[in-house]
Amino acid sequence: MTLILWTQTGEVSRHLFILLRRVVFDIMYAMAMSDAQTEDKRRGGLAHRNADPNGCIVRSPRARKPKGFERAIRRQRISGDMRKRVLQAAVCLLASLMILGGCGDGQAQEEYRLDESNKLVIYTSHKEEIYGPIVREFEERTGIWVEVVTGGTNDLLERIAQEDGSHSGDVMFGGGVDSLNAYRDYFEPYISSQSAQLDDAYASVDGVYTVFSRLPIVIVYNKKLVISAGTPRSWRDLTNSHWQGSIAFADPDRSGSSYTALLTMIQILSEDMPEEEVLEAFVSNLDGDILSGSGEVLQEVTAGKKLIGITLEETVLKEMDQNADVAMIYPREGTAAVPDGSALIKNAPHRENAELFIEFTVSEDVQRILEDRLYRRSVRKGAEDEKIREVFYDLDYSEKRREEILAEWKELTRQ
Image 1 (cartoon, rainbow, N blue to C red):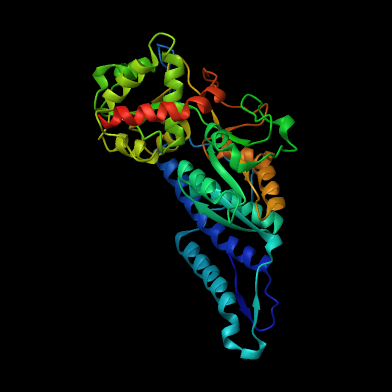
Image 2: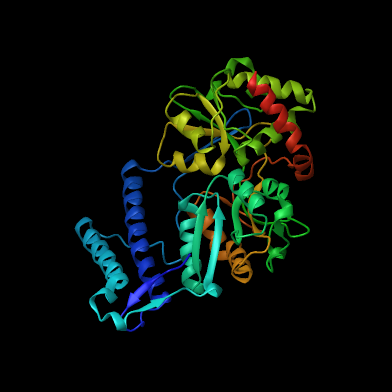
């Protein structure tokens, strides 16, 4: 990516442009946060947590309070008219700086091209609300200009495989570590200097990836349509024909989190049921309606098109703070909390900057914002979060059986 700034004297540096761009984003973020806090006060929050008599947790948390990460998260509240005037002024200032040279002598104009040593290209499957604050803070602290390429986990990994170290990005930010591990041939080893402070349950011994956040799989349901006592309590319940046509689930061939959920179900239920029987019963309950992406699961449940769904804890917690009609359950047998992560792409053009970014993602500051504002669980040791019954997710089994299980899945869903 080439950034061209026209100025009369060339005195407007990249750092100033990054700072001014950040001012605009900060004001927009502050406005959004202020509105959210006002709405939370109006609604009184959702501050109850109930222990289900059957041992499953039904959770409705209050929005978490910030503990002081990054200046981008402002506590000030700006009045409506003032906010608009400040935002308009900041945008005008930023735009003026970009076209300032147009008012001067053509001979005085000069082109400023960003030096390659100050670039970083990130491929990410995260939503903007996750990567946005982290990338902006990284830019401000390092002066490195970041280009973000977004997409689904599997789509981006396939792109990396096709590029195979040629004209590719620098770092893959996002995607379950099982998915990253499956594409290990396209990443270069990197072991974080903070590895001793990180949870080693799913650590990559040879540095294929660096963990970022822990993401439990949960069952979400619509409280208007399903009473708490009637919700599925276990993975086995999801194979009961009672739920046929009522389950929202994304295609595991496209969604990393759905593949993790499917493998978790197989690992748990195959102790008592043959793997083929588990897959056949679950696919039958989907009744031919398989969603194209994990983001659609919650949409289907909140809209009442499906009664229940299988998705990530983070997604449901976020919705529960705005929608009292949604709740979730951790399956009785336990659930996987496989982390997502980051990986250094083979032959990264800006390797040093990519390593700096990976280090930044597991820093105390970033991990704190995961817990405080982004509804995620930290991967740093000693993190304080609600305890759940976790089952160990076998990454080796997941990688070895991936093609076979997805082939069987495709065959069953075609019938």
